[in-house]
Amino acid sequence: MTQDPAVVMLMSVGDITMDMTAGNGGVTVNSAVLIRSAAGEPVAGVVVSGRWGGLVKSADTATTDATGHALFSSRNVRKHGQVTFTVTGASKSGAVYNASLNVESSDSVVIP
Image (tube, rainbow, N blue to C red; front, top):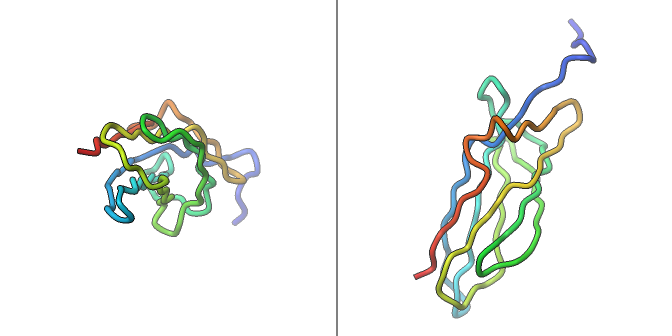
């Protein structure tokens, strides 16, 4: 059975998880973005684009693994305050990213 070329998979952000790792006199903020299909299944091989905000100002890209997660890490931060990660896009051949279906598009942590 072949797939109809007009049928495309819809995908969106299912979750963004943030945590921090201490080291080198500061903190690295980590963000794991889950990309899922409209059916709720994880999608591998998606190039996810995002933007760091707050104490970190930069753009970043990562590719989802077999569990549908794209892993991002900020530069080392030596200040106290908020760091935000916002998904700005996702692309994969044969799929369409629909941000309106995102469970969340942005998440943040506060460095104490």
